[in-house]
Length: 168
Image (cartoon, rainbow, N blue to C red; front, side):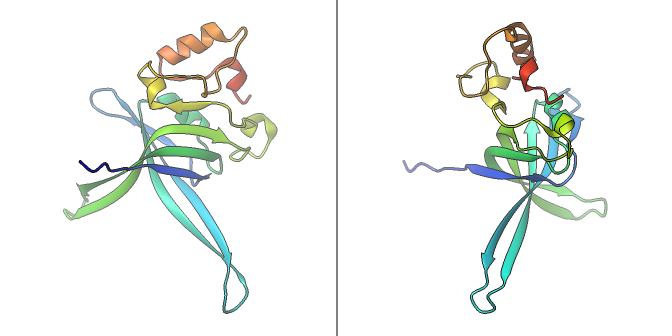
């Protein structure tokens, strides 16, 4: 049987602060828009051109990560594409394609301008395996030392950050 792959990897900047809502069953759904850009030199005119694409991203079961996802923040997103339909207020059927995020890493210093608010740089990530409590966490920014009790408590709650990972 032929295998198929549905994998998306994006590095971009948030277009607005992330929003977290809860399903009737209590599961969190964090959504945000991500801008990715590419630039090239126009062969005919010789001028520099740029194109920005906007991506709708959804992350399940990570309500606390929304606190760090502020407009302008640069992030790495790994996940899969999914399409769904819904009914608009006018009764028409609309379609949307989203990236369902399985792994997220905060990058750079965007989204706050200052080193206090936006000074977090890489090293820590939030992934599906950490949310379910399984998987190898060696590449997720796990720190040794005094942060272990806090990190374990946060991992049990579905958030793999230590005191060293907090940007303020």
